[in-house]
Length: 166
Image (tube, rainbow, N blue to C red; front, side, top):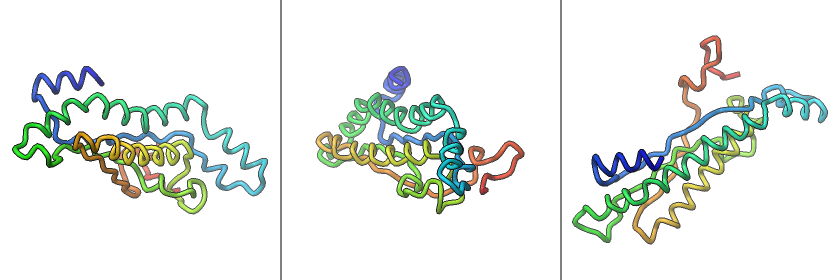
């Protein structure tokens, strides 16, 4: 990420808006959601994916946001300084999270969400974006989070080309 920030610095010298839009859906726990007893529920969660799958979701959905934002802080500061009103924040970090990070119903109420790693990591992404808001305020860099709902995309297609709506 530091190489990307260096390239942007060489080419443009500043950044006004950084958009963190990343997401990976791992550990599909659909069978756990349909369990009728605790043993079946437990088995469904174990079969939902590997520890490596869970870690990959956290790496992509949280760590990438953190390290991208940190890598571009100097460029965001430069974006603020190039404007005529230096006390007015103009640079901004926008983190795209998900509405599933707002709910504890990752396996129950929402038919579209079957992944604890995805919903947990999106909750963390929301919190990270809000934390950046307070941490970056002294440098007049804004940080906001948007949490869209389900959106049919390539990421939500199943292997047979249908949207994963259960």
